[in-house]
Length: 158
Image (tube, rainbow, N blue to C red; front, side, top):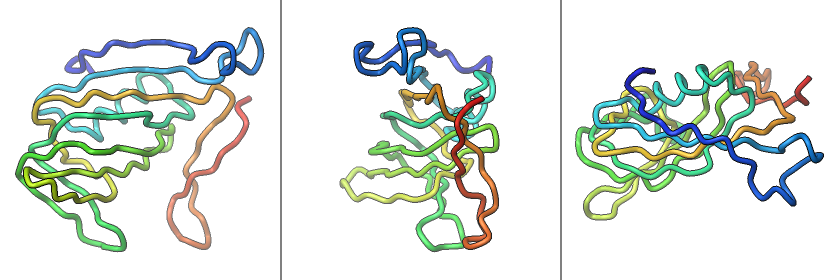
């Protein structure tokens, strides 16, 4: 985590409407910036772990990648590209049990690709990321008997 120079911002968004009570914020917001050469997924998971995030989600992300590793929909094999892409969208959840993230990228012609974010996505110039955490929830990933994948389960935080 030493490589991440991040501005840790603890904010309560919209105090009049984002609180469950006057003392308990509904959400905490974190902001960080990744630098050239850093791995997007690894750094997000390391950040979530270092901050002990239990119910986090991506609010927004802008930046660029020079190496891409993703798994397109309904495909077993990953897609790898070594070219420059803009991050058009990054969405998903972060929990103590792991992350589930999807990314959309556009190339120099505006053509867009997307899929499940894997390790191996190398930042080109920057990745500016805002992460929220739901204060009253706890995310877990458990094997779902129907899908056979580790799926999100949501519980009230104790």
